[in-house]
Length: 118
Image (cartoon, rainbow, N blue to C red):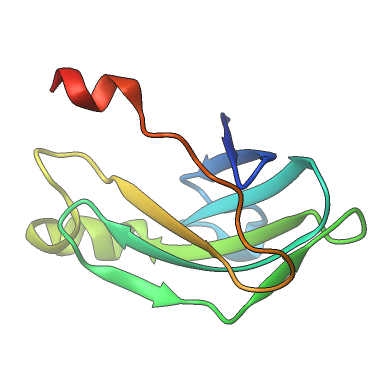
């Protein structure tokens, strides 16, 4: 799992290359879970490392009753059959863009200090 902080909350992102259930076997799936913090309404967008947008979701509310969302991506076969569209140097990389939509305005997120060294 990848743990990170955004909008003053702790999140966890997990990737399941074989799906979450038998029904999803062969599909790449990810889950986004609110680990700690107050409820939040947000929109998000996913894209691959080659810039291919997967799709946009309507606003989703994360709270103690609904802390997790499962996001279906592509089938592994589709990825392998269209490598130039989905893979960069043999890697399937997902970018997740999150935007707070409801409630209070988003908290300030400081600039990444390592970005200045690049």
